[in-house]
Figure (cartoon, protein in one colour):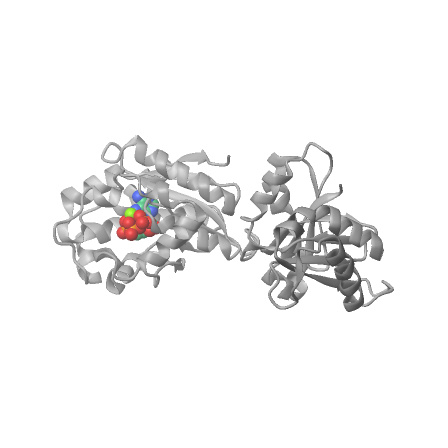
Length: 390
Ligand code: ATP
Ligand code: MG
């Protein structure tokens, strides 16, 4: 049977003149993401996206699972094409959705017709096919208000399609349609979620991790590699940038007041991230900071942290409760990896009494003990890049 995948575009249908470029971005994202499941024809028609296998070797189950994680799509269905004829539509529905019809207690038929030359109205077609299906499956009741199964019939220009109840897609906008950012990925629970949320808004991601070997272990690094790989199902292909951070942390420990070490360390993260961003055409920096969660995440601390750079800092999870962040982490499959017990560089030289309301003038004074530019250059020059695509 002519099995295919039918997707509905999300918000981008509102984009007017830009719509074409959004669609092209979505199509190329889908093609790239499905490449490992076989060869597919992917094209847009009337705010729907059609994904058709080119041959028998395509892994349709794998492809169908993967499209649930591609941003820019609000609903996904497995569908089958057939002739634009009322009896062909019934036969196709009976055969293709037979299992679902027998399993459901109730059903209704919903016909849509964008090809207005089709000789019946949508209501007439729904009634016709609904009547025949109810004779063919007498155990399944018709329920037009809260049916368990919706038998969708779509009469489009190129063909007719039959599909069951559509499943919810990933939402958002196609990754890459809203530019690129550097996203700070620590290996905790929050930053994979903030990275996912930025990508959902159509942003391409360069994940950056600050690594303090040997204070943090090779296992801690592998954990971030694994998190990036998991995020790749949503964010697409990414290169993880690992920044050597040990020397900077030692310098801060040796030369700066302990109570200011965290905020000074975070300012270094910002400077280096901005440098990576500018050399890759990124327009912002994303972090998993969350208001009031720890001493370095008061408003005062965030203000002092971002003072040393000029790119905007986007904090997608800033006002979420931890339980809400964890719910997203579970949904996207990063939670179990995030809670593996490896140290992050932030926890290595944690001050006993960090300043929760740091003063910028005092921070600037404390930083005078460091050769900031040289330290930033040295870390930047030592970056390791890891391709994290599957
Ligand atoms: P997470 O759960 O993401 O680790 P957190 O609550 O532990 O966040 P912090 O450790 O204070 O918070 O870090 C705040 C944010 O700073 C992180 O969400 C992340 O964006 C960034 N960050 C912290 N440590 C690192 C690191 N080693 N490499 C890259 N980014 C980091
Ligand atoms: Mg952390």
